[in-house]
Image 1 (cartoon, rainbow, N blue to C red):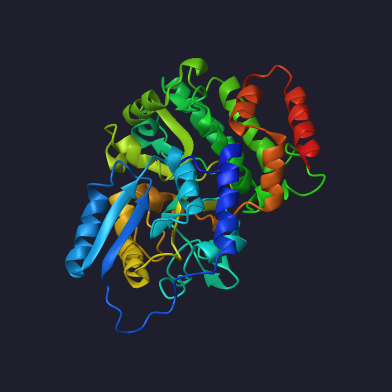
Image 2: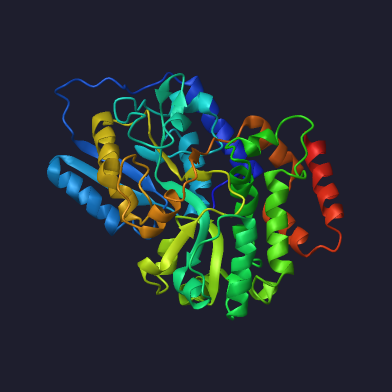
Amino acid sequence: MKKHALKISAILLIVVSLATALLISRKQSGSNELSADDKIAGKIVFFTNRTDKAQTTIKAIADEFMQIHPGSEIEIESVESSQIATVIGTRAAADELPDITIVLNEWSKKDWPAYFLELDNVFNKDEIYFYNDGIVNGHLYRVSTALNIGGIIYNKKAFSKAGITETPKNMEEFWQVCEKLKAAGIVPYGTNYKDKWPLEKIALDYTRIHEGDPNALNNLGEPGVPLLEEGKGMLAGWNWMRKIVKNGYAEPDLMSTNWDKFKMQHARGEIAMTFLATWYPPQVIENGIAPEDIGMFPAPGSKKILLFADWRLAISRKTKYPKTAKAFLKFLYEDGRYAKAINIIPPIKGIIYKDSYIKEILGSGLDTMEEIPDTIAYKEAYSKAQVDYSSAIQEYIVAKDTQAVIRKNNEKWLKAK
């Protein structure tokens, strides 16, 4: 689920570049036009990062599809998320993408028509979130596997023990809640400081919700704009985390925090809150908390609620059975089959969500906004500046001289542009 601003090696960059050159240079093959009498048959490969579900719940979907469509065969191929860029990059370079493949963020949108089939006749903009994210020259090429919603996830029993009857609506009320939790012997907020990757969400997601602008990160790629500026979302998020730690609202020993331990403590109510997204509550449930005891509300200072995508899927232009590939892709999304199989939120509009924490945050009264993909200017600035958000926030949280940390990172950022 850690999915933003991927740092890839020089070797992988070469692989991806070779893949792009190869796919663009050859004559496009495959067709998006299907005759009415084409049968849903033939063998296709579906590629997923969910190695934990590939041969259980995902296989059950494939089996159901094959039963409905005799003559079709769905092979499921899976690799760990950390290996996807290498595996898919290599497969693309060899012109051997899976029939239904994950799309690498490193690939430029202008190259999608060389890689993938159009999905205009599979999905429409009124039924799926992040539709515009998959558009090139008016045609749809990729779709998100999930809908994620960012916010504060909290343990309702911990709140009740501390005598808290309402979730905070602003930063002042948030600090009051933290005081009550601390007085009740409960750690108000889990930072996961040592593991550090959860801190990146403060830079990426909080920046946008604080400003109520899905382009807040992309704006940092503009000439002359510093990374950290008073009144802007990035620095506001860093200051929020610093105050949590300085006021004693975080884990007592930052250097002993542990992700797996944290999930258990959160489930038991020893830690009350954390800022992540809707992919996280199922993991707390797996650690023993009852689903009805998990709540979710907008982070303090939010102007809007951020909806963001997950891994994206597309159909290879080289598939021998385009109708079967399209039919299975559609089948995965109907009734949220794939998302339910891997325990995430379907990206389908109009679905009635059964989880109370989803209903709670969407019923908060704030408008929602869909994330916007990173611009080339922002990506280049991030890559050249070499600012590791998680490490930078770690440093800022405990720094004696915060201005020195701000200056250092702003100098790196501005120099990169």
